[in-house]
Image 1 (cartoon, rainbow, N blue to C red):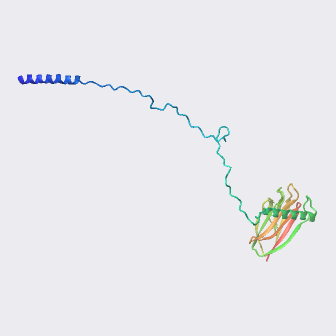
Image 2: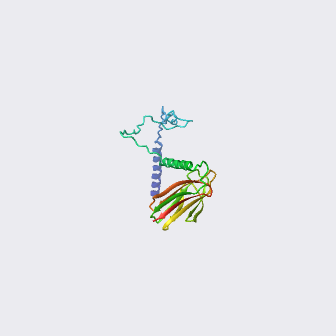
Image 3: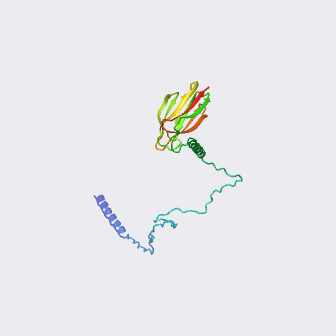
Length: 224
């Protein structure tokens, strides 16, 4: 019994001692220090300005141009430089001279020949030839019919500005080719440029005609 009482007294003494020690502890207040300057920069941020090169149009900046650019200079040469002309011009001049010669020879003006034309005969050893034709004047609707040995090969052909035609397999001996004018178009007369080319792409014949309606031009190819 006495043991329990002693333990209880000791416990109360311990509590009073702890309360006295705790009451002696005091809190320390740390005063705030006022700063003379704000930590943040008070200056407002301004947007960056675009570079003004004084070349803007309607407030739109344009790239700068540089005047002093080193451009490649033309090399000096002691020899005169050759200037190439249009090869078609020479060809057109030949056509014009031929047309004028036909008109003067047959007294044509705007009228075509009233008589059949014969362009002679040519000889070849080729197995075949190309028969080609085109309108050398204004493309105005000229029509022709082509026959070989009196058999119609092309019944009705409208002449264009470029060469058209067909491949003709030659028989031994004479191969007569007739070009009959069917229509003169709206610009008289019926004008055409024809040529015969062999199997080696050699031009055997090349000529012009200016025909009235129902007049024909003939050439004969002789296979040897």
